[in-house]
Image 1 (spheres, helix red, strand yellow):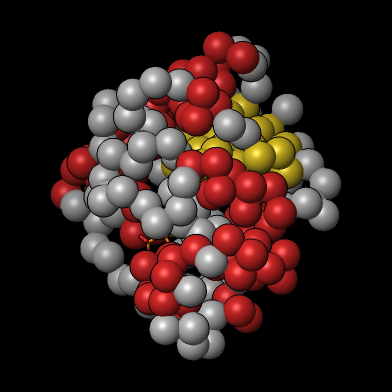
Image 2 (tube, helix red, strand yellow):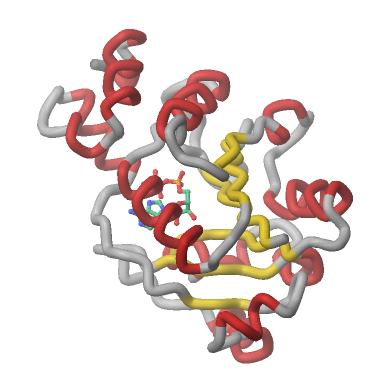
Length: 210
Ligand code: ATP
């Protein structure tokens, strides 16, 4: 069983997240994808929508997607939403499965700033999506990590429950949540960047200064 874990702030979830993660899910030939909004993002200022609202938008965004399961484990846990703790929890739930943490290249490029980053590959595989418009160079520590754990073939990736890093050929979708929140605040060209039911939710609750 190959499980993808896609974590993020999703403030709000947008078509960049949805299109690229579904492409990754297909490319990885995975069985399930767990989408995990963070409760208390360790790397950012406090988000514009509450954790409950962000989870609700994630549920709407993937409502029609078989095999994709929004997961509230970080909302139920106290303390900062470190991905390592989530992956350890997933590993306890499914000791025998291939658990693959999915992230964009901008996040992977500075992975060495994350809590317990060297242990991530001890509990999971990593799959890295292209990130359009964000050409973040990898830090030397991330280069070294890839040198040690990089894997070129999906067949090899499938054989390991953890410890592999695969670079994916996901499509370029140049949308970021930061730019999107600004566009919503100005009520300018934002609706086509989120799923239709997410746009309706943002309008209903007048989020992000709309
Ligand atoms: P912000 O612009 O505020 O940093 P974001 O759009 O990157 O937000 P996050 O919730 O921080 O959204 O991202 C969650 C994960 O999704 C991260 O691993 C990030 O790299 C990835 N991601 C976000 N947007 C895209 C995109 N357009 N293409 C590929 N990956 C993306």
